[in-house]
Amino acid sequence: TWGDFDREAQLFGLATPGGVVSQTGVGGLTLAGGFGWLRGSFGLSVDNVLAVEMVTANGECVRASSQENPDLFWAVRGGGGNFGVVTAFEFQLHEIGPTVMFLAAMYRAADAAHVIKRWRDFMSTGPDEIAGSYVEFSTIPEDPEFPRETWGEKVVTLAGVWAGPVEAGEPGVLPLRTLADPLLDFSAPMAYCDVQSLFDPLFPKGELRAYFKSLYLDELSDAIIDELVPRAVDRPSPDSLCSFWCMGGAMARVAPETMSFGGRQSAYMFSIDGIWRDPADDEINIDWARRFWRDVSRHSNGQSYLNFAGLGEEGEPLVRRSYGESNYDRLREVKRRYDPRNLFRFNLNIVA
Image 1: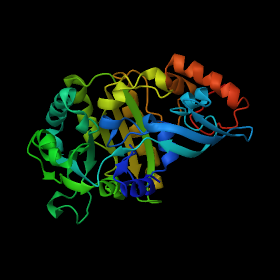
Image 2: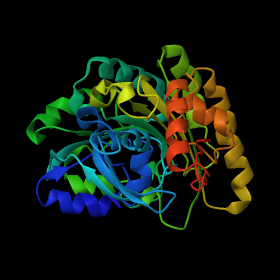
Image 3: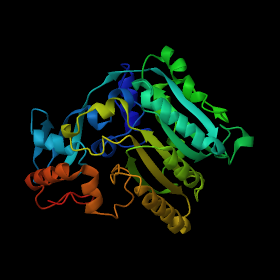
Image 4: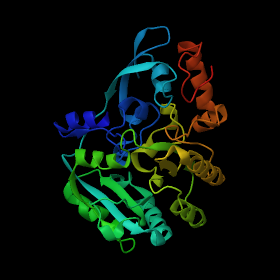
């Protein structure tokens, strides 16, 4: 898991961009992108892969890097599990930690549109160190970590890690802590590994049912914000989340042709995280996420973050759009070479 990775790397004051939940597996998250706190300064997880070792469909063990099997290396960085089983990753590491400045300002839902507009304006010229921030709609749980009088309150949280010297972090994130009058503010210097596991309680193992969708947005206009905010606040389950992820900084400066990961030219990613507990509520929650996703689609370029693709119901059209036509055609060529019989097909499948 990323938690295992982070604990070992932090012994040396190092890290590479992972996700935002430490229990997430390294492989699945990385091969389809990997949005984490450090993406503004160091890019996505997949941007930091230097090499992989993998077993292909014919049972061959191969190494792929910029020097060895470069076509496979290009394809696997974004192409998910379509080409084989990755057994080892080699990552670029970066100096960060052991303490980082964490941003966690929670604003009332009534202030959400105002806060998001000001966040958008700040991020348009903001520094790379906080370009990995995001905005999350949630409901405060009945948890002693929160004041009892706030339980059940719908909020929008600005969260992020200042990926730079911790002493510069507090003034660096201050503008995002004062966009309105926060209901709560947990912003503080924290151990990097603690930040990485901070959201783990939102996803207790074996207790939740989930259906995640996403879309990339080229812009986040006032009109789009005004339309989406009421829908994001009005979720059928208190466990569900909706989030705007900034896609600026280092991740935006990687040339699109460098790897197969698609959608990099977008300004934001919007995720709809349907989360609930009772199987009897499957239909209402999945229907909510699908309807919301369809309605947001008219503001999107049609591409999705393929780690958040629901059950992949849209099939090849969504996969093709998300990679882009030229990337998808090139991925098919690599698929024909390494897996012509489509052994690796229980995924968002690239059809040879």
